[in-house]
Image (cartoon, rainbow, N blue to C red; front, top):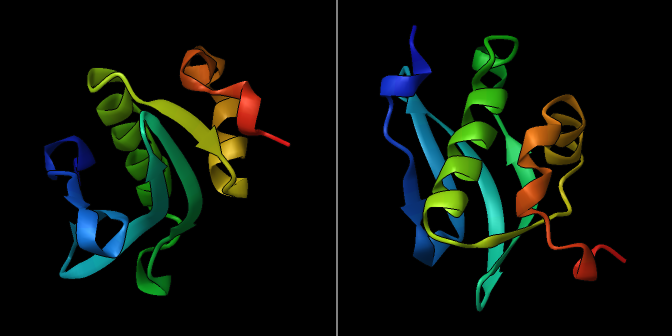
Length: 99
């Protein structure tokens, strides 16, 4: 399955970025303050684990943040790991809030 074709949903009331795959919701929990988006937690349903969905979701969120001039505060351990593997995205990170 090509995850590029699945639309990223910004569910603002739930503070979730969502991808719906095979009828199941994978999501990133976040908080936003001004132009900073604090990524708190990434979750993929157990049935969908190991299919690259978390990586696709994080990449879609990073593209969304980039396109909308948001800064990233990656508090989620999975997102931090993704950034280590894809250092080109570090340009979005707001280091001031990483304490």
